[in-house]
Length: 201
Length: 201
Image (tube, rainbow over the protein chains, first blue to last red):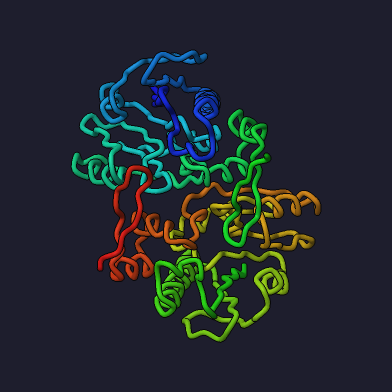
């Protein structure tokens, strides 16, 4: 099964702007992309990077500079899987769970209403990543009469989008992106509430 | 197996202070507690509420006004499970996954370094909920020679501690706490980044 890994190659990870400089964001985003591709490959499937611009990476790359939804839907020939490039906590076991349910549509929700990974085996389903996508995708699956399964995974739910997500990667990751973040001086620090991150000066 | 559900009965959920008034926080916290106890009961196990003060609830209650760590450790006779009272997204299937691994220590990480649920089958393991508890608990398991399993669950990872967690409950919940939140006027609202919540005036 084709596993699309969409990647915003130009100015990636803008919501990390306060924590990382532009070059750092690009490096970190590429480290996560490589982690995700290697994790998918470790399950015996071939990732295809769907990038907004040409990219040097040791996996096949297809370039499409349209917004995410259009670019993914243009390549949605069931069965197809889509796994976001910032799932830096994903493990082969977590990715394998996506392929376990024998359902027309399998969704892995992300924190904050996103759809972090999906397997589509139904001809009439299309994505809409805008807005509250997990809710919209559930509706769409019902609309087209597709049976739906949801994967309950912390590792697939955490996409590293905002500085507060660093703590999850620091505590639970073990790939290139985790290593990059540690080498950049970030570490988990206890607070009164949830654990936060701090960076060495 | 005994399933402890620790509950802070006095001034609960202080980190929801900006979003809910004191009476609302108490109501909402009790709705979550009932959801969690009913979910545990639905798996065929008996929840025991470990409360900081006497409480009216249709499950057994043990009162201990000490801090969380001391109160839990005082009742830690293996095998014992501990499930936090604010896991409002927990389902019977998610809770059942806690009991599936045949390991001495089973941990379900929470967002931000917490330990949201655990099963302890080893005599020498004790909890320390202070600080980065998931990291500390992994270390403690290794120190005492306990084999460790981790449950990869989004539903067990989300504890409803802060207003931003409301969006998860609104999108993925279906119990009393979810209903309470909807009736209080909260709804998920799309933003540029992750989905946020807003409240009716």
